[in-house]
Image (cartoon, rainbow, N blue to C red; front, side):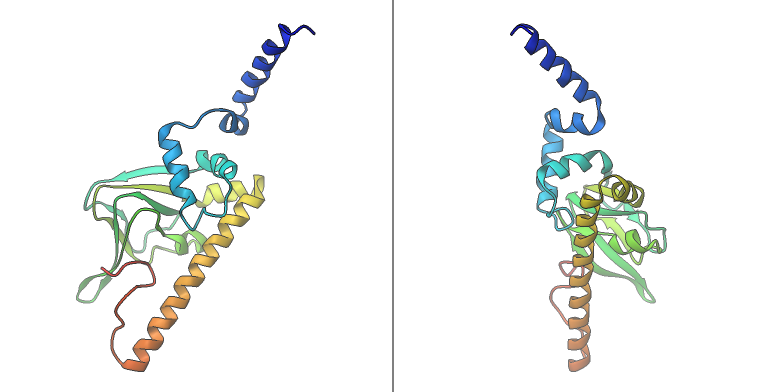
Length: 197
């Protein structure tokens, strides 16, 4: 083989690799939007344990959604098919009570919501609304199943992260209930979801 054939052969191998779904993600350069998403996901508890190459592998499984200010993302009782990460903007999580709507939390970039219904398939336990123009990254149960079959190590990292997050929220709820029981009044400060609204 001559030195002139070698670069040509390398180009053919690279071109063939780019046609394979997984390899194309590894060999191509990420566009600016994809770079922003990967950078944000690295700071998000749900995806923080994934390596850069694992994040790039799952990019094609993620869904971007945009919502106008005041638009409902999902309503209490609706089926929960996905978990969401706030990419840009803010969302408000509220619960309908006997005397109207009660605000539970306001979440911003990098914060995760919708994980309970995502895991157990139950209806949404609250209504979530875009407080500002909001962009979300969605990860759906069907994609998690695909990961479990094809990339179990990545799926396990995501599931453990979800379990950690639910555990932290349960502990915070227990603490708040304990304080409320001890004092007989509502506890102020951080909620189990995020910042107090």
